[in-house]
Image 1 (cartoon, rainbow, N blue to C red):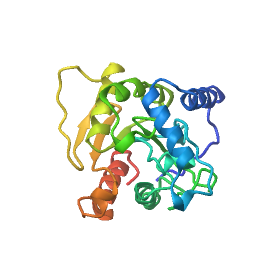
Image 2: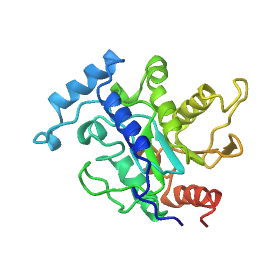
Image 3: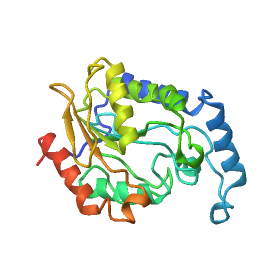
Length: 241
């Protein structure tokens, strides 16, 4: 297993990722999403009433040398829309980062806020949609508008060997991004299911998992053991185990 960090990262790549981060944070493409995120940040909920919400689009984060890209659906209204870091501050993130830590992709199992010291190792985590959507349901137009950011990340993470899509919508979005990048044919169908894997090309593979939402984890549809099994397969494909 590799223990990768920021040492030796080309400055141009870091600068490009930082520029993309700034562009994402300032994005105003989807008025409905921007209005909702700002409303949630203003009204808040009782348990977070004393906190200052992020309330803006949420960029991806992780290791610029990453070989693994994890793609979720969208920030949670009182999770990443509050903390400003994807999958941070909600139970889906608790489940995800604990698993990434067990698999050696994170330096700690907890994700509380964007200044808690969490570092990803050989992994980058992003969302298909960068703003929290009402009822957690972005429109097809909003997904299409936002997935260009994943496409940009794909081009800025040249070491990628695996994409892990969390949920069917994230899987479909990843397939669309790969088609836009010219790495998948337009007419080919891709089945979704927990642990299903697809070869993109000689350098890249796409693997699917159920999303670590409470709906899936509380009902047992997704367990820590079944998610760990997917991450072990990722490690095996990367040649680490």
